[in-house]
Image 1 (cartoon, rainbow, N blue to C red):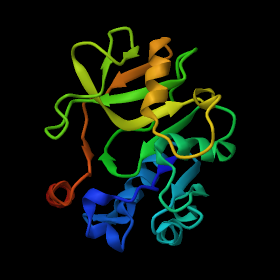
Image 2: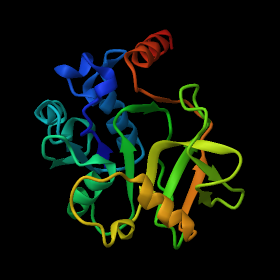
Image 3: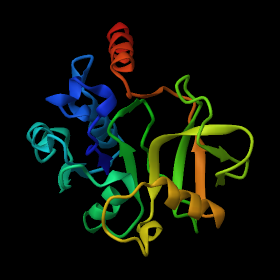
Image 4: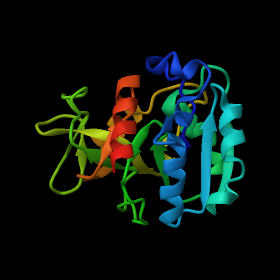
Length: 219
């Protein structure tokens, strides 16, 4: 599942007329990098949620055939459903097994290779070094591969993870964040993770978008 429903307030005025996942980087919309990476990794069925200017996302991606994938859309009401509510809303489209989730507003060269989520884990998070704009990090990745909410050596959650539908058991439909669910699962030892040292950037501001554009045009 590619999360593409956010309004992108910090990216305004760029996102007033263009949804953030369609903002171009080195001549290619951000979301296309994810579609291509997932296709290369053998992921054939994608779900994309959308809200703000979502018709543009549907028009650009279509059914996914040109990348060799099948894309289904999870439309959300105006204002979107936040990350937790958006994933729960899309669960009927995501099948019975574990599924990838990736934020549509990050760029990375992470390889989405097939890997089993550890037995008993409700979520498996890809963690990265803390960027300058988020020095405090999010969670702690232990040597045994478990992820905790408190402790030293905090890393940043990359916005890439593998989830089980059971994480959302008991949740009421509607808008709500994902982080409280993850922290609840961490408290019972049911979140695992991995560290990724490759290239990753959260495209949260026009300045970071421009920085990435220049970097990719040089490479």
